[in-house]
Length: 180
Image (cartoon, rainbow, N blue to C red; front, side, top):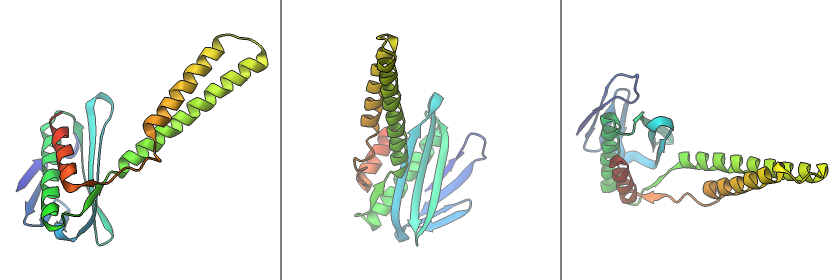
């Protein structure tokens, strides 16, 4: 199987191929039967820009395949199709292999940190308002900031385990992403 895509908007097109268990690209050749760990991260940023990354660990060394682009681009779709095919090959050789998503852990900690800052800012407004003995607009701001902070902490929830997915679950998830 051969895949042609631009890994980023300003980079030239690359050609990748999967032949049996061998994944070959511009400066990477990996025997997929030697993969010991797998991590897939997908994020949608501002204005529909996506960041996709598949990290394969081979002999304690991480090999990363990335593609950044627009949500509805043929390059993104080709990259995701390639990732699904890589996972399919891994599934035939190592069906027990799990796929993690460490990149989403970083985002969760970011949301939680911003939430804690919002709660602290809300507490500051409330304390300053009480110390000033004025019951005004700052109490409203304190409440809004506190609630927003609690919501962000709840959304982030980095203490909840980011459960590793099976290869099949990850393939299904990526197929849903392709349908976006």
